Length: 472
Image (tube, rainbow, N blue to C red):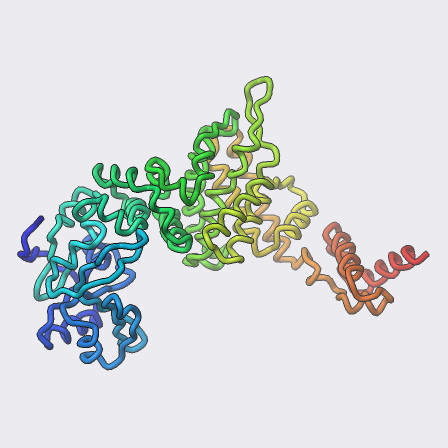
């Protein structure tokens, strides 16, 4: 353990954070920025949030600041509001025993900063800073940053037994920061892995998503190797066990999936104008899960022919259904579940250079999903072997070009784009009900083949003919 002597490190503190620190100090309390904001500042990253720890009790914090919210007052946390921005201010505390590998039964406030810092998860997150006091690094966080190392504060088994989510957080930090996990911490993960089953699906989802959108999503292999995946993503284990003896592939299914995840992030970064949401976290999440799970159906559908070549016919539909179950299990919202399942279901679709074929694909997939489908398909191809790669990429690019042309010309690809409506069909004598929708679908097939026939007069004439035939 390092001494309490401050480390001569200078960190730029935002004006509002400085104001909170100063107000607390003027009232004769200790106050520091703490945790991830300090770590990220040392690393030259922009902190997402600034958390403050103080010797002041919650009721004292509330007296000092005019506008506060009791966000977690039982655990010592008060949110101080400055204008419309909130900053969490938490009293130094010592956690009691953990009842469920996640939440302490009680917390006790302490006037001692060291006691507060020693309860934290990793050394790089257990540093505190104030302009007056400098950097307080009691557990070697700076050295671990220099070594690019994730290491628990104190006994890692104790830390993981207290809060099992810390194991997945450690893997996530490794992916986000490009660090390695220290061997003792890694060994404790293996020992405590089963405890992750006590953590809620929502919290696992949040950590897993942050890992997959990180610079090194392949660190998911650590979660697999330590046994963490068995609790929340056992399908990935089967993917890693499934070889692909096929000229089109050079990795097993799981490795290919991770390469696809990495590729799709690079493609996404370059495609902001195409999808109109370059920094949309939800869109990014949809894409990385589609990339991770697009071949999840392959293990169960692997067939080897007489020449020793593996084939996976039907894995797209099976993978779509599996992805639906997995994402529901992880408590994703319905929009994400629907989009990911759809992208996987159609990721094997090929473009033959015929706009008629593409219009039918767009009609099935939905125009809003097509840019994402193109990205998934490109990422998939780039994660395969070099066999016919340029030909495949050229075909995808031609699909993009034709899709742009279809949109530019306003060619109809859905029922709502037809020149007739359900009301028009009813006025022709069709009784309200399923028959109306069926008639509109038949008319859509006509204009998918020949967009120029999307005129009210032509479609009503065609509908009238079909109604007459059905009534004869």
